Length: 266
Image (cartoon, rainbow, N blue to C red; front, side):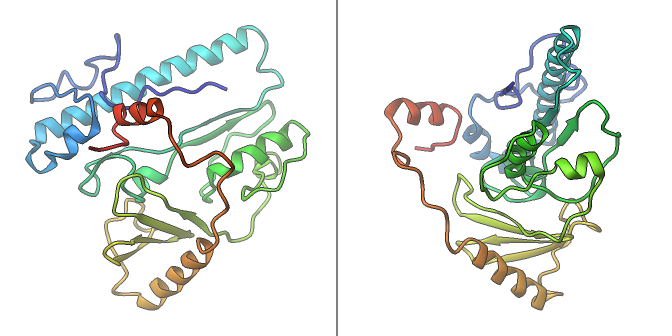
């Protein structure tokens, strides 16, 4: 398992990627150490500062891409890829002013939820799949690929899709638990997506097939579908799983680490 954390603030990629995209930006360099430093002055950021942050984030992505390439090249040189399943994904995307926000943890829009999921294995035919899936599918997929039986979970094995291009039944996918209040939730019933603000009660409805970047809110035009999806979302989240024993209390060290990453605000 290779876990890369680099595409996070302060967006300060190392050479040779530093400056690759930001050198052409007409504006002052901006390398904030904490996300709240940007969120507190969102309204005051110039277009040049925003462009610099976007470019700096892209430099982090480019640097991470290079490291993934090195890792895979090393595996190939050791002949470890001959019987391997390689899966590349992310736990979240980044909102770069798409819907007026910045970073992640406070939105359930596509720029945060729609992450890459790339699978490679010997014999798999290269193709793209538009059907939405979930990160909870990774564990049963990897276990079935290894010939093992996955324990019961909310996830579905994607291995049949990969090896046989099998079809799938319509599926509801939900998202919740934004780190920064107000709480926002989402329900995806392809191609429709409902986004809710649990504090204000606002509901937004998008057709992702026609509007993948969520610019046209259809909630007022399609109230019955909005209400139907809201009921489905409420039903899915009505009985959350019990937390494992020992969870829910963070140590001072864990709190400090989360604070340094911007997940805990004073």
